[in-house]
Length: 206
Image (cartoon, rainbow, N blue to C red; front, top):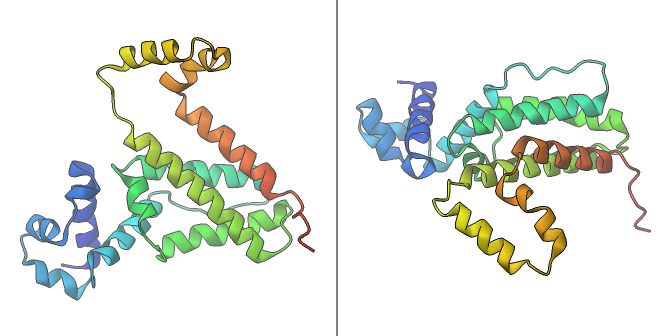
């Protein structure tokens, strides 16, 4: 048994039962070993979750970037990152709960921060902050999307919404965006807004 076997078993459990279904005991049972033997490889469940987060990023594949438009390359990286999170049940929650410093997470940041510098951010520290904000927006968006469940009374909820907003014409006009959201479109719009802000000159704090 090695670390990768443990991570793979944990990811299988994640897909089957969500984050709540992942425990050191459950992983040990899946591998037919005693739970204490896992601690030779991972000091805690948190360490295991961080390795799982890195494995999720690894599913993106090669993150090397070229000489094209940096904003478009950033958008592509983020879109691929989002796809990898969505591919795993509760992938957003796993990533959000970690301080992931695995090789694949670091490779992604190493590719992204120079793109932000090329796009107009002057300081590497500011570029890193911008990258963190973009990642957090992506992770938060994924968590919201993965947390949404089919509502058996969705029709009733929309009817109630329309009743409550009878004197709010703007809310009535956008009701379809609330009850029939295009998550891909909403995400792209949000990321592109953030990217436009990231390459703007920083306001003076003097």
